[in-house]
Amino acid sequence: MADRIKQYIAYVDGLLESEDDCIDWDEESKKHLVQIAFFAHERLIHLIVTVVFAIMSILVFLYAFGNFTPAIGLLIFALLILLVPYIKHYFLLENSVQDMYEQYDKMLAKAGKKAFVRQGKYKR
Image (cartoon, rainbow, N blue to C red; front, side):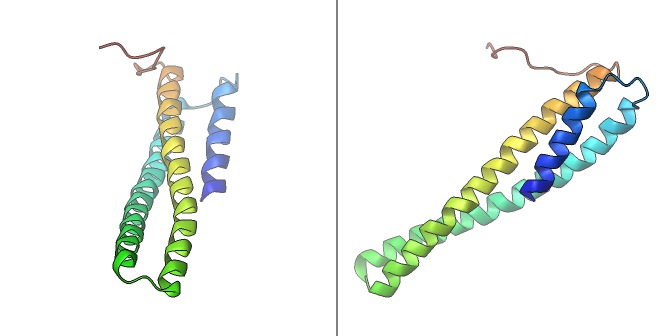
């Protein structure tokens, strides 16, 4: 999944940098919305899995305070080792989907439609 999302973002960046006037930005933005939905769903699933995995890790850690055995220690170690890639992958998905939102806004701007393009920091 990580390779797929990176390749897709690179593909869209290439489209956005292209000076080709033959690109149908309306059609490309519709396709992009579909991909955003796929990756946003994947992000949600990974969030749920990561949170459940983190809760399990905490529960095993708390259980170990009263009933520590070498097997429980090994389980805690394994859970913590596995939690790192889960968190890393979730953040890759989160940041990539955020990048795809910005790409979508740029596509709308190229299509001549009104789009929200963030400039600078937000002021309240």
